[in-house]
Image 1 (cartoon, one colour):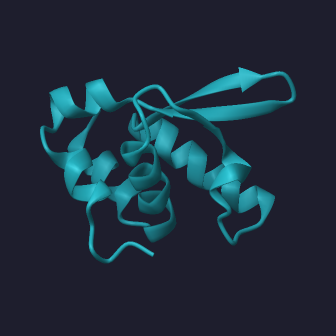
Image 2 (spheres, helix red, strand yellow):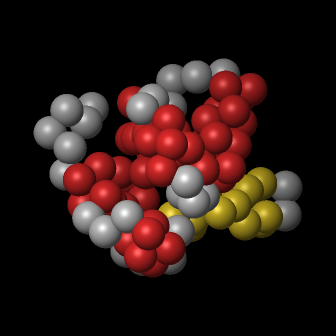
Image 3 (cartoon, one colour):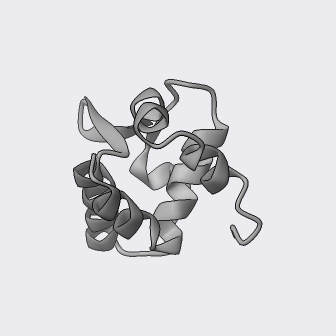
Length: 94
């Protein structure tokens, strides 16, 4: 995980919303990409989750014909202590 990639991924409010939701959920929570209700097209949704995955913030688990996102909470906390708490408690979140 590189700091620049993580910060670039979190610069987008929709991606930050996804990470905040996962950070507030119990550890190991798996959610489908569509379950976040982001107001974007399917192609844009795919792009946002690809950015999060490449930054190392999530991993995706194949579930038949769909995919679920899982926060890499322990890895993030080890590399950037306190970051998830900041994102999860952002007062500017929607």
